[in-house]
Image 1 (spheres, rainbow, N blue to C red):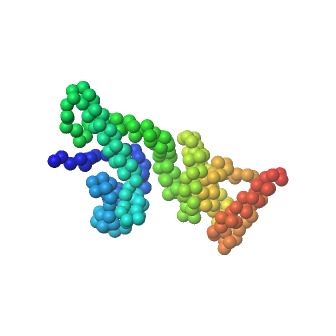
Image 2 (cartoon, helix red, strand yellow):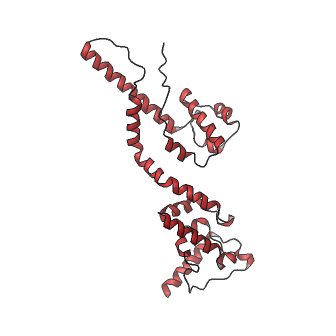
Image 3 (cartoon, rainbow, N blue to C red):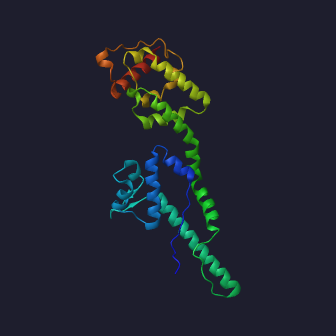
Length: 252
């Protein structure tokens, strides 16, 4: 008796590459094996997860949701498998109806429909086109941002998520990317940084255009910090200084 287990699902390479961009090659290998195992078993036990991962791997485990019974599932894979199963079933019913109507014969229902892959691919592409469009649009920018982020001083590598948001909103083309490099070079060589006043990455990426010139906002009397008090600037102090700066601009 032929098994009715679907041997395949649609695999979107662009989505997969985007979702695993920051994972190591070893972790990606574990992840793809777990996806294959879930497709065969339906759900994964913690034993299954640990058998393939050997130990708890955060980047891999966070790709799966643990339900109340303690089973792990990747929701995207589950969704695609169910969608494909429903479509194949509808095709089998349509074929059966058509043959019964034309020939009044009982036919053997095919377990799978050869045309389903093409149809399902188009169907899923239509459903996910907005997501894929956004991911493709930002994928290269995210990779470039990661390179810039790694070159920042350790003191600036704070607020990465918000910094990325500001980066994507302000860097739209090659000219912007070039200006950002100039701005970062000017900022790191500025007296502020030499005195120890170093902004968090989330703050700097929100106003990096101010540093395209070597000395932005000329005329503002900057407070000079001692070495002891300027090593770390708290978010509250940084916010207070920005308010003070804006007040100064409005008064002049």
